[in-house]
Image (cartoon, rainbow, N blue to C red; front, side, top):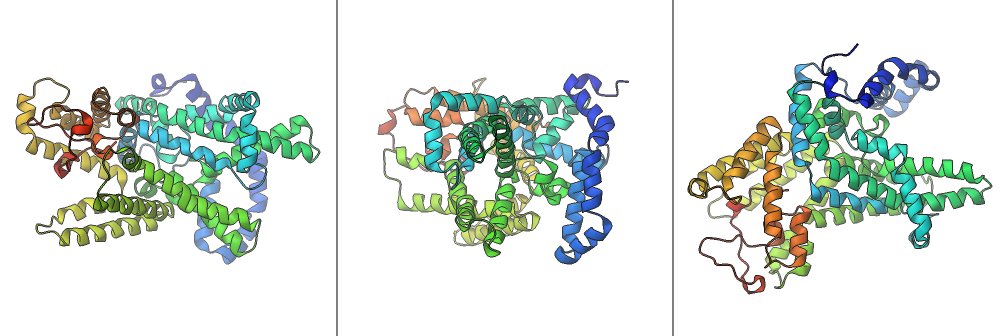
Length: 498
């Protein structure tokens, strides 16, 4: 019997709901029997004595989510759920056709490298066999695992929730469906990163198992299982056994938004440190994981996120102060990733640290603006901060650019479009601001005076001010790019971020 909101769903969502409610328990019978034996009351008491009450509560929470296949422990119809859904919608607006996020997603392809059968040399050798490599790539990217990961947005908790909201009826479902479609670039990039990096891992792992005496079919099956587990461990995942109780809770959905990957990496680092301390496994492998996930991967991501590459392409040598600020910003971003990856407490420490840094910075100015400290503290919850930031951006734009809005006509460069888009996005979760930013970026990228790398950066999602492009003023006539002098962009112009 169709329920309310049935028209907003698909055959796939109907089957998934039927499985979760009618079939799931039947096929999980063996799993449930094993859980009842392994995690019996007697055993849980022993585990609690060894690891503490918090560990037991987290384990019981995870087993409950694995049983139901849901990461929510609160009712969908409750006021808490509705408010949480509205706040999480801001995640969707930020990620709506976010080309920069998609590009940065691809750097995780190197996560499949190791010091054993898929070391850099073995991976390069496997990649050199192009016919086999692309055959494996095609098999992996078209596997049921990656198809399900793409179709259900099973990348992280917030995206999975948006996908679930899209199955329901009413205006919320329409907006959620729109936001779900906006994840397409990130979905494609995620699958590409996993398949491209996993192809060499998969082929080399098959060779390892065949050398151990397994048949070709057995080796392929076991290698794919290893590939999948490696992907779920080192990539973003909303699998109940791959996220923490904090991430699954209402508070974690707010404070730990955008922190799915740092949380995954933090768990890998923590496990490697404990294994190294207790002399479990290979010391070289554990040390390499700590170094790679804590520094290398972290540095690459934050350097690209903050457009450090712009220095390399700049015609003029950046000033020492400018380089210093960029390097400090990248180091601070790395610290924030590590802190927020540890959970809610780490998020609080991160925000407190940034607030203190802001106070020190403002105190050194002749006319300090301590109101910025409040804005920094709001970042404890990115979805809330995003909405408030968009409202503030619109208010500042109406204050500073009022004359330009009135007299600017219908041109795309009229700041009224972005101001209205920010308000609509913050209140309704309809990503109008994203559309305006994309149009503005593509318009700027078509400027013939720009260099190739600048056009590519703009198309890729970086804003003009992030790569050092000057804002053209009414008093400035167009000149050849290299003839222009670099000017510092006024802070009031820095009101958008991709």
